[in-house]
Length: 131
Image 1 (spheres, one colour):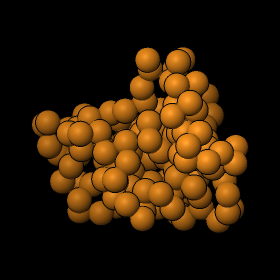
Image 2: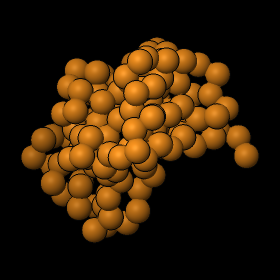
Image 3: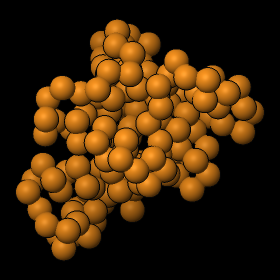
Image 4: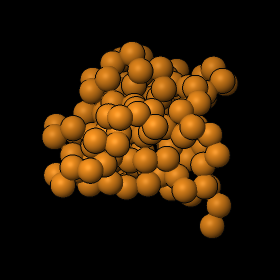
């Protein structure tokens, strides 16, 4: 079974991202759904939880269908949150705690600056939109 979860990791916006902590403006988009879930429950979801829930919503599935969807999704590799539009084009940072739970953070905040300096935190960048 594959996973997209990170632990003790900070993902900063992609190098080629022009926005900085911009809320998604297209309702129902992957970015908007991820943003809403992460902002309403900081450290409440793992990456796998988030990916399955957003995919389920976009497919119109019920809560009862999510376990089967998770099995389907994670039977093969899936793009991690480094490929999320939140990091690639909207300019957000994501912190994964020791349990793999995520909080969406403003990359210009003191909190992100402090996390980036910690030796126990792996710092990554979102994936670039262009080669």
